[in-house]
Image (cartoon, rainbow, N blue to C red; front, side, top):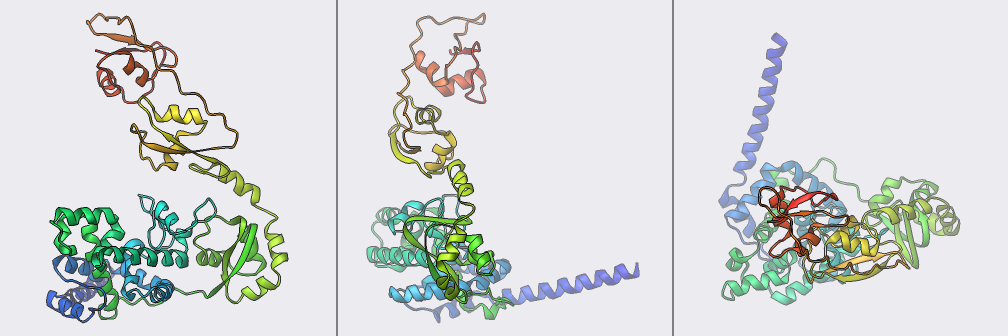
Length: 444
């Protein structure tokens, strides 16, 4: 009991000390003090202060200190890269904080919408800025190439709007949404003037940027500096053409494969395959001379294993386009995803992956991208189901339909006037689209 009492006192004491520390940080984020500090940071980019910004500052500086410390730790790796490119493109250095809002400085993170990398490029936008993407490589994850692409994109957005806050809003939600908000506001030009007309996420985006910039600038005052910053590995590139097993390459150069992964987050597999042109792979700078001197031998050994395994995975992985030809299909009236997939001899899961579909719902006029293997024979469109001439009546006076082999809900809905798939499912309490031959359905 005595030991328990002492332990309890120690825990309460530590809690009291921790609470005192948190209270000190809260005192250090008084509204007037933060406003004064932020005014000292004003430069090329406006850092407007209000209650929303103040709330996010409390979040980063007080309530989620562990996250902020981790971001600061990672910043020692990525900020030198960001600063070099921002200087090259004559952009405000403060834009380096935008990558924290986007990704938390995690180079391989992918959002639910499909945006990827430190700067969260969508696949289409990444392609627009020449970021190569295939099964082996995704340059949205390359800290160097993605940062340069972000600089180009931000430059174009600033040229478009002439205002950094609007450029940031457009980076988040797209230029179209910002123009729409400007129109709806009566053609006002400032972010806070069009604030209520912007998408919900974008309203928080700029205040978060200001809060992150402030917190990073005053990290020492909030005791947020990590004990051990992340280690930056100096590197140089080795050009590789053809196939190479990266694990084998690292092993023969006597360094850790995990370090090679850190240097090349754009390389998605343990092997790389680049047939048309040589592709740069980053290696630790103290290994680059040995790699270049023994290049032919190292790449010969690295090409001996793993290639067939990767090619098999490439063919079988959901949504893979490896070795396939691209087709575009325009959805017509009566189309369902399963029938379209069957015509092209592909899986429904693949079609959904290729087109980022969250459900099986498709709309008339929608264009679907479909990838097939060479020489795949595309089946003819199915013939429309015949319209029923006789409608049986059951003992309750309800109209019924007996399911025939091959019948689908879509087929049946087209047989009877005023009927659709949802009505059939409601009338029969169906939870799925599956039907069995001989099943009797109420249709009215």
